[in-house]
Length: 220
Image 1 (cartoon, rainbow, N blue to C red):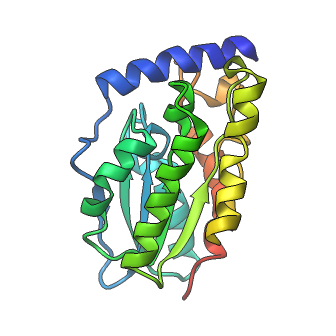
Image 2 (cartoon, rainbow, N blue to C red; image 1 turned 180 degrees about the vertical axis):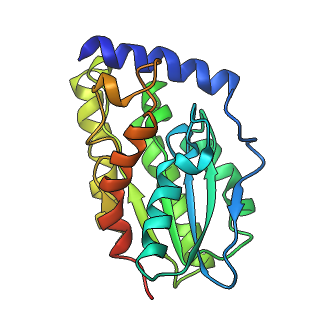
């Protein structure tokens, strides 16, 4: 377990510097579906679908397709950027909000943790993003996606980091998904060779984790 998280630390630090994924930090992948409502998925490499041959195999696309197959009508903006931190997300949020989202999924913070950024800083960056979204679009529903600290960060840091998402969700009154990687973390077969990013099969399981939380925010 400790070796797995150490590999995560080293590799994601590399990703944050090189940003080798297919997406450009100044761009987001948008897929329009007529006059459907819009879901914005705003996150890092986990949201972007790092390492997948087809970006539509990433969990944001999987859950949206499932919703639409059940009679909903949502289009998607995948605004995932490899290596992104909450500070970086805060800096590019205004551009992403150019199109009004009916649902906004916020998945950031893992890279903050891996860089040892103070949890208080991460929390305030996330809070600022939530406030901007709510002030700009009061009717937009928000899903805050949580992350857990790796063991190598130490008990004190982990204790502080792991309280960020539940406390922030309560304080800002937004829906919380406690841990995005619940079904895939530490499972070798469900992650790519880097041991970090989910495989195509892993993304399907991540989508299963996300789906009920996302569906609770939808409207037909």
